[in-house]
Image 1 (spheres, helix red, strand yellow):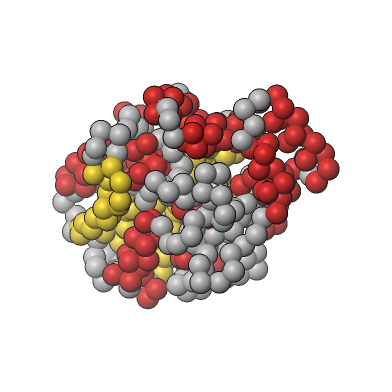
Image 2: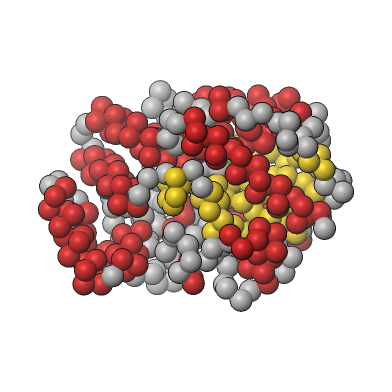
Length: 366
């Protein structure tokens, strides 16, 4: 039976790393300290970090290799959000080491760290080619999804005059509504590499790594609780459980059974997130059985309009390709949006993550 003893587990916010390099070092150290059975796999990606460092997606399988039930925790799908994801995974590893989580032999854990390591290192959401991994799960051999409203807003997105940009945004929103406005910007687009929420033209590093892990561990043959860690959208400090499975599917029913009435669904308009194309969720959906589900655990920070503002400025600076100092300086603003330097926010994040991991492990243990 799954056992947990969290009331005596102090929340330590020192697990939040200052950089990809430090996050990876701390994560690897905690993995090595584990005495549980474990297997590591590493996936180097193209490109290097700001100091020439090699960039790697690290993974570790913890527990029996034959376990029929697996908790999968993913950090850094969106690179800069890896700062929050690293901290959560490091906290989880510390709790495992201390015996606050005790896994039964029929449950294993797969941790995936820095799924988009280039973006994590450079403090961007995307990879070196501007690809948003969470818009990349489409069939590139077929006609790609279209987003005509993105084209209608393209000039406004790259407008240097913020007041004029906001005026154009307000005009579009007044005419088409808030949901259409958010979908136009963030729903996904496949023809503008320099723009935000670009889905790419081929499978990206993180998608290939995920697909290889699924095959290597025969995850299609197991019951899965996948939790993809994100930040930057929603109420400050709250971890929203977002489910992109079809509303009437067995997976959605599993999610509600495990996590309760707080589960939100973009398809029904109950989430802080609008429906989007090319989510990594869909890769996992395609291999899941009726006893499995995939959720996004989204930790809110600042308002959506501020999210768009900080992201658009990031894309403007990188499209210029001339001022690396300004790009790196803006990276600090990106980090503050996606991982606020606020101990209260950090404590809320770690507490909520522990709560949701407990729910998932209990669900897998029934």
